[in-house]
Length: 289
Image (cartoon, rainbow, N blue to C red):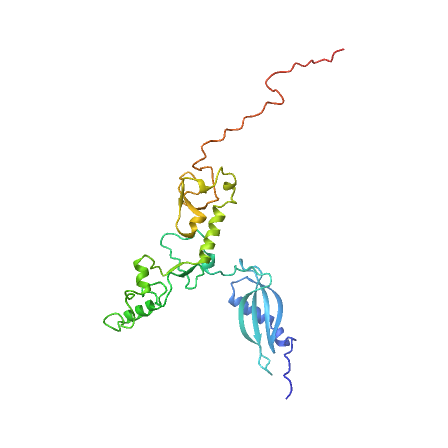
């Protein structure tokens, strides 16, 4: 069995000479006067050639009109395959599309906006553990979608019998709801640490405000303690005149609004003038003999 013959990279003569036909096809697809000079002919395969023309349309700098022509074997008539506008090596292109979840920045949300979290968000973890399934109205319960589909289809007079309506009494889910721990998901260790790093960057010890403060927030009377493990490193500022009012601040943070900053530093007094500019010096207009 003989090896396959490789395709020739030499352009077909009839297809390469069909520049006028390719230009006419490009001008038909484009607006009048936007098809420029012929750039080159690219071999696409046996008896298949693509002619490239400059694009003069505003906003498409570096783009080129590509018109592909071909002919059948043993045929002398060249036919049009396709014409399309393609970017060249120096084309002006739009930025690569980024999903909205990666474009979102703090402060972008407004009234009425919804920000759904992924089911595998690393910042969250299940609110309780055990052999029980989450309640049917939970954000992570798979039964919720099935129940909604069944009710919409009106398959039964009531809710499906094989789907629980509420967690059974005495189950882990029921006990969690009774003691106020019925949240489907809570902060994971990763979510807690990422939040702490973010707060430390905004209102932490290394900020310029903290470096110039008379004392840290740990000894300030305006600090509101928080519950949980965060109380060891953070609190909430309640000084309306402080720059961090209402924000989570590090205990090492500080500002000039410290509750014990009783002594206001006096303004520095200027030193004695080196040159007395308040009196006049008498000078003779003629030098003494």
